[in-house]
Length: 135
Length: 136
Image (tube, rainbow over the protein chains, first blue to last red):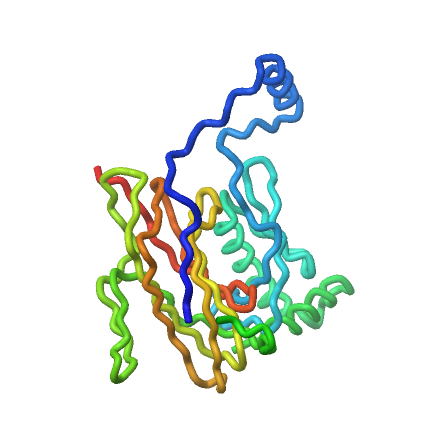
């Protein structure tokens, strides 16, 4: 049985209420100092997901890969902590696609170079072998 | 309804197809799926608007019981605008299972990309998209 739910009503986006003048000035000053003026409103991003696909027909995800999302300036960063790999994009979808591509590339690079890997990369390769299967 | 007592499968299925169309119908006698008007772009006269859409999804390499969720996401904001929940049972990893979901009119608040994301047991399996474009 499938149940569909529409979230909320369609509403035109309203600009946020302006802060009091002093507060706005202080915020601008802080933004200038910290270089963090956001031109567009922040997007809603899930903080963490379990990834079950790499969008690569050669590879199958055997165990889900934990992915954390964070912001830096106006970019979304998708991070697979277990293998220290990152993806970047203007939204979470783009960042995830970039991460998937990066993980696939990493898999094939480490597979090719597996006899010459240092300790850290051997650990990464072990995690990849556990989580990803070659088709 | 979701059966809480059933154990969720640890096998991650593979999403082999996800298509958005105007209407998706299952033939009552054969259970064959018929997709009418497959599209990935909507031309809009004026935003915000809404449009009925149907999703066809097919998975394979599934074994056991899964709780499924289709999320309709506005990519620019990351907002989930709609979702559909269901269940999936598969006895063999060699078999494939498909599902059609006829959504009621879905909101399209602004120009941009909208994604239908397929999740099973809270694991992201893949997505397909629709681009909403302002008519020039």
